[in-house]
Length: 295
Image (cartoon, rainbow, N blue to C red; front, side):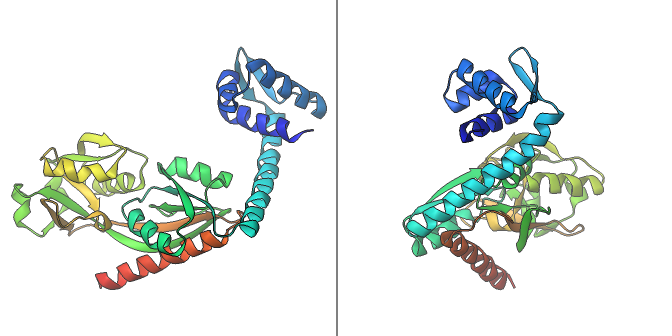
C-alpha cells in the first residue's frame, strides 16, 4: 500500500466522481482508475460501487475512509510540526471564518507580532467550516455560532449583540430601540441561509411570529451596510460590524434576546504551531478589550 494510493483514494471518496477527482489531482482518469484498482487489489475488497464514471463508497470503502483520513491527518500534523521546528518565524496560518467583521483588526494586531507569517482565510457557511474543521484542514475557525463536538475545541470569546440597521431616512431612524414585531412588514437584505447570524435571526423572528422578507441574499456580510445605505432594505447586523461613518442608524432589539456567540474553534488533535498559539492569544486579548470597552 502506497501513500499516493491513499491520497488518490481520499480524493475520489470525497468527490465520488472519477473525472472530477482526476481534474482535482491533475492526473489522467486512466491513471487514477488504475491506482484505485491496485489499492483494492492490495486490500482484497472493492471500495466503491461503480455507476459509469460515478463512484459510490460501499461499506468497505466507508470503513477504510475513516482510517485513511486519520492516517493522512497524522502525517500532515507531523509535517506541520517539523516545519514549525525548522522555521518558526515563517509558515502559513489556515483560517476559516463565519464571523468576519473583526478579522481585519485581529490580523493587523497579529502581523505586528509575526510579520512573516502568511494567512489563508476562507469565508464559509457553518457547515462548510465544520467539514474543514473535522478534517483538520484549518488551524482555527472564528465562528458564530459556537460549534460543539468530540474533536472540536470551542472557546467562546465574545457575546455580540445583533442590531437592526436602517437608513437615515427610514421612519425608524428617529428611534434607538425597536421590537421585532414592528419589523414584520419590512424588506430585509442579508446573507444566505447557512451562515450562523442569518440562521439565528430567522429563528428568533420565527419565535416572534413572522418570517423576514429578504429582497437580497448574498455571501458578503460587508456589503449589507452599502445596501442599507442605498435604501434597498434594512438589515440585522452584529454590533462588531458597525461603522460610525455610515449613513445608518443602528437600533437595539428590545423584546427578544438577539445575541450571537463568537467562538474560536480548533481540532483537538491538530498540531498547533507557535505562531498559531500566538494568534489565539491575540484573538482572546482583542475580544477581552472589546468586552471591557462595551461595559
